[in-house]
Amino acid sequence: MSNISIDSLIRVKGCPYCELLERKENIVYQPRKNLEDCSFVIVICPKEKREVVIATEHLPSLARGLDKLALFHARKYKQSNVSLRVDRRYVSDHWHAYIELI
Image (cartoon, rainbow, N blue to C red; front, side, top):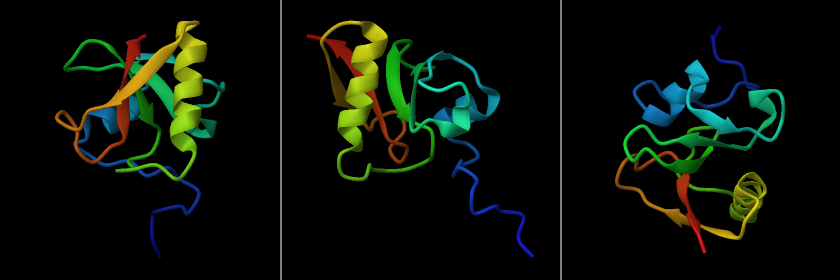
């Protein structure tokens, strides 16, 4: 019998973003009260020290349309028109995008 629940979120040990999510650290915006109910959160990137939207699961890419949801949350958080810039240099296999003011 496996210890993995089919309902649990995918997290990877050693991934900086997964570890932030597990410890619930550096989160500056989460759209729902329960972290497990969110597709995205906004955190302060431990390396770049700036705001970044991250998927709450360890996913290398997003399903169609979820990028628009990520942008919606970034705009809601910043109360401003922003764009998202995907940059894979820091963590290549956990989807994230830096928030940039337009």
